[in-house]
Image (spheres, rainbow, N blue to C red):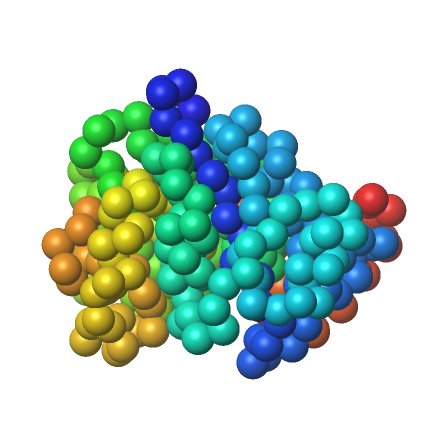
Length: 255
């Protein structure tokens, strides 16, 4: 991080009881569990002073201990990784910035974490996330890939599972040629005080409608700074995703 006076902690929320993929953090990916791979990638980020796994499950805690990592137990009732991060930071004061690292991206690039951390060099930035230019038509219409529109300063104006903006003078098949669309990369950064504040807010109408927690923050007047990355992330949401990834690793003979 450019500002050496800021202390940043990377928190990896990890729960066992995933609806679509129970036990996901403990699945094997080329000889290592997913949570170990995420942890090891996060340790490579130069901006982080500390990395910790936040979990409500002893099996995950035992695995983190096995590979020499650090964990903190959190309550099982949390609805999001943001809430889990807030509980951890209450127990671990002294950090100015919290980076919420997705526990299902085993090959997250440390450079993405460091890029997100640079957002907080600006004093007025309380919340930040990453976005990526969309190149394919398919991604524009995929509801599982949230889109975002930004203002001239890179602040997020709105997130949606629908294609935004709507291109009035263009057939759907050529929208990517008419406008630069962005998809949201699900890694968040928060100033500690802002993290505490947003987790005290009740769910908002837009959040409920789109099932996107960041809309709660925008709806309550918080700014979300964005930085664009060209690096792709590989998220494991289902057993099918894991099967595809393992086939790819085997074909490429990657470690």
